Length: 616
Ligand code: FAD
Ligand code: NA7
View 1 (cartoon, protein in one colour):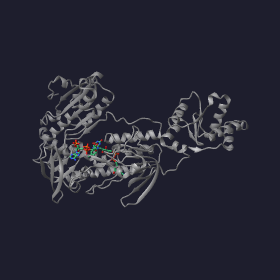
View 2 (cartoon, rainbow, N blue to C red):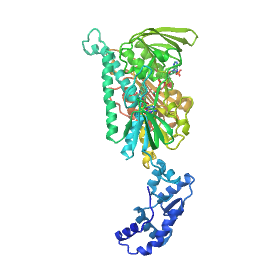
View 3 (cartoon, helix red, strand yellow):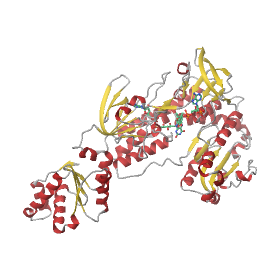
View 4 (cartoon, protein in one colour):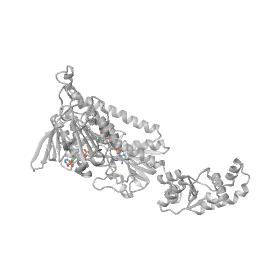
């Protein structure tokens, strides 16, 4: 976008290139065009029938901006001359041809993109501003990295700030955010470690002659996982460098609406300005406000790199992070207790949540239900040491036990307080510190967006953060209007028996559609691989929640069984496309799999018929 005055030289060269010999006859037209551009804050050269011209007019109207538009097709020969003059001036052959405050913006797409990027606003306010970067991203996790790569691919100058504040016991990690370092990746690998344990138990039934006792080496597992994570950190740094994205390993905070100040680990400050910002700072685990919690407890941020076996462990919390960690710790042979304040897996289907609890309990995880911690005291130093945990049960009685390790998984707080954003008009949900953003991931300030875990009211999942980052950047820098679809996002809880779901829980479906409109088809099933060892015969389970008056459209898919994540990912497409129960029944299954049970599920809950296991 540049300011263009009519130069005689420009026009002469155009006339000669076009073999136009009437340079002198065009002079009045040139003056006219120039005067229109100079005397109108927004000048649109248009054609009355052109939909793109109407689009830019609507755009300015939607911002309550007054513009002057002339319709070249209604002006006869003069209109044609004006178009020729415009070609000479801007090298643009088409309409609309838009000028703001004397600056050439371009055609429809260029005007729309300039508006999205904020450049149009700058022009309307007096002229383009200079920034160090087109886009500054705070947070180099799943969302931030995805957004940065997309913006760089679209030719934007991008900077990413990522910094990990050490946990109370001093744990830190590299570039890549929660998922890579202290979330999905190490969690799934430890889940795999635990599954080996179960397979070893089954192996003799398949002819394997196993030693009397198979030992698990915690340090070896951590070392291998951490080595892999380091390679991922290195990969991210290399990718950013190769794509020309500036990576600053410093903790960023807003100093002005378009200026960030960031401090590295030596407290050295860097300042950068940018036209647009994406806040993708995620969250960190919360500690309860009880004596000894911060001093002696740890969180998932410490667990995956813990340099010693945690020993007898208490998990406080009953959401998926607590249950997943409890599951793999028990799976590698530890004595594990989970302190549950109220229900398992708030927000998930409660029938499935209870089945998970039963399955874990049958494999030795202990649950203390209706209990909150009151204090943690150190009894003995060591790695691990010994801690005394006091809790309060719902009936008012006291709970006391000793553990080597206490892990808090009682929720996560958004990393927003130190960003200083409230000072510049960004609004937060006061109850959780998350940023309030609209369906375009825009905060209450036009040039500041938010993605991933830091947005209020959205799912905290890696693929969601990635999708939001990619689509937001495409909307910012291209004509794309595609929004992230936060509905029907599949997910899986990686407890020892995995739980995959997409769509509504049975409770939510009943509340939304009314009990009279809901039919639930379900079945227990026995994974073939568990048959010889007779493992957990009745625990695997699936159900389809259907809306009767919508041709039995499936609005909830739930599976508890091995590889539930893999099963759910595929079926999620069907749910997203509006599959009905009949579509599931018409689908031919893959035999012998757990997934095929969804193609043969014919017992409804309403029928009251038994859904005990079926053999293949
Ligand atoms: P993050 O990945 O958290 O990245 C934010 C980054 O910003 C961090 O590196 C942070 O240190 C940095 N930062 C914060 N403030 C600043 C600042 N002021 N300046 C500079 N840098 C800053 N999701 C799944 O989809 N599947 C799973 O199986 C799964 N398992 C999980 C298991 C655990 C134990 C946890 C904790 C989470 C899990 N998640 C899972 C959730 C997933 O990790 C998050 O949804 C995802 O990482 C969110 O990405 P994000 O980009 O929003 O933030
Ligand atoms: P969640 O999903 O916020 O769940 C918190 C769990 O901790 C939940 O079971 C709570 O019980 C329990 N809780 C909360 N406060 C306490 C106290 N003070 N004492 C005992 N138990 C408590 O947290 P997660 O850490 O599992 O995960 C957060 C998100 O991060 C998650 O969505 C991932 O995507 C990433 P409640 O049901 O409220 O009684």
